[in-house]
Length: 603
Image (cartoon, rainbow, N blue to C red):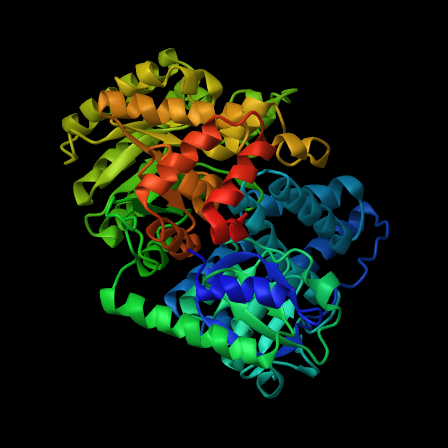
């Protein structure tokens, strides 16, 4: 069961001169070569000084001037760029024109009577702190975009050129001599700096921070540059990277630091053979070694993610996080029906008949609209959020439901309600959908009258009553991240209780098993769209428990497919039976390690 690449991982890990690290695989490809450290211009200390009221206008004009120059610089970066690159840069231009963020800066300037640099820095810090503490990967990754866009403005205010340094050369990115054909390593880099890397001919990108949804990852996939992000311990292990060589596997999310050249050559040869074999079939394996089929779907945040999902072999979209349309800088604002319809229908057309499951607006908790934030709830993650918010805010909900229904005329669009806690809430949501259908009929819009409708299983109350839910919907999707959090009453962002946040806890596994069994009994499709689905080991366990549909970051599909296709369904079912009898998460993990062999490298 242990492939040659896995064997090399263990063998090289035991070499005293070589260290191996794992991160998020975001762009496939294997590269071995010299490492160069990223050298973006370091952040300057932001000056703070008090100003008088008659200086406010002068400070604001300085800000507007820096803003206009920054917009021109970003527009210049778009020249010669591909669609993905330009969409990201367009998003930054929208940030610099944001009708909600800019007034916040002016308010800070006027109320605090401080220089514009200090006012802007305060607003940037507040916005990025909010996003990074959200617990939502997509929102957390947008913090870097705010820092990049307004960091450019800040450099202009500080009278700095704003250009980046690349290993000694500066200006317009004169880094081709130092980065061409080499592996760039860093704690993190900005999207603007990433644009310069393509021109410089960098061979691979390795970052300690970031996730599959960060813009650097999206750009790397678009440019087919092998990349691994979220490599914890990279900078501490590698130091300043001087004189170092790396072997980077963008498919497996593995980074080897100073591997023996012989091992690197063997590893690359093995991966090329595997890639050639995969290219012959044109798609990822979709059945176990004894012929039992499974389906891998993609989690996306924007319609543009569809292209990457298809290139990675996705059978469809299992989770379209619709709240991205409502995200404007550090706050949420309301897109109209036409804007939403265009986004949803674009995704449907891009997936060309494959399913596209759209999760209705999931805001609240730590990613709130102004009306939610005003409540100042003591426990916002247990408060007025997601479906609860939508059922009260009927106009917002109806606008979205109509847009989704209209998009269903362009493909296999499905609709899914998040954070449902009771049958009462589900029935209310289904009634709202019927109301939206009636209004679409009155307005003469075409839509799929039999649109598939589902519910997310994120709360223990509905997992326990999954049989009742299964009789009312077409499908159920387990949101494992929140289900674990709510089952164990453990905030996954709190290190003090992180030991409780474990997907292999018996309570979590029994709830998921109950959902799978209820779906099977009533003929209701069941999938899973949390992090459990993107881990090869937990995916194998879930398959053994009866799950056949998995939704994940597109970059994780190849390794999950490889793990499932290398095992027999009988073996996985036997392993799952043993795990479900375990009395603790530690016992469950021990069984998985013993039974699944090399696949446990993904734990």
